Length: 303
Image (cartoon, rainbow, N blue to C red; front, side):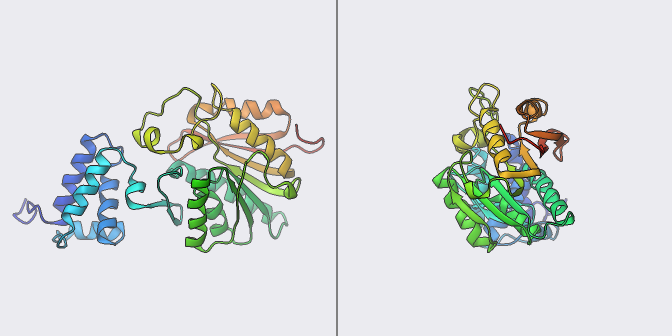
């Protein structure tokens, strides 16, 4: 190691020290988080931070103290996204903070399945497919669908006024044209009943009484976005799925996120309702059960 490598004023040395602090605090992705915090402080992207680390660039004057304060906050398990005010989701950067569920990487695969279903509708001859996002939170899924399938007509609803305010900011930030409403996912969009092509939802699904392991979730995500209203966590998902059955046209597609322990129980619950066929459960990028996809049954109306 050269003397320059050991210089505590280089970007490399400061970031590496932060990685150690975050790892000791139990943060699951200490290196990614340290780089993201440095990118935020310097006003650059993470690739530029990594370049400066390789080149052993010196820290800019006055930035070290601010960075170390943010690292201390992250070590106390304040969510990274609350500190930077932003969350990266697929191709978008969204504004997030207290009062809204921070979109997780595993939900990117849920959005991907909804995008695939939307593209399939177009391939099947629907020029402008109708897509509804129930329990939109920050708007991450709805906005990603509109971003990646510009021809889609996207509606989204959120119950929490605080989360709806964040989603509104993200619509304005991205400039993507979606119809965002404040309301209840189980009663919304009466004018769309029977004509929607794709419904996607990341509903609350943590079992009542369960305590999330991660402090970032337990102490900072809004409870209204977490708990599924029953011991199995599926009371609210079942209600949301029932609403989706009313909204979807026959043959329309439901895409719903669930906990990794609900890979069998959610599809079973949907099958028992009689509203769905072609049920399939799909893993996230880590190989864990994450998304149930089903097709609206032809014939009798939803139950």
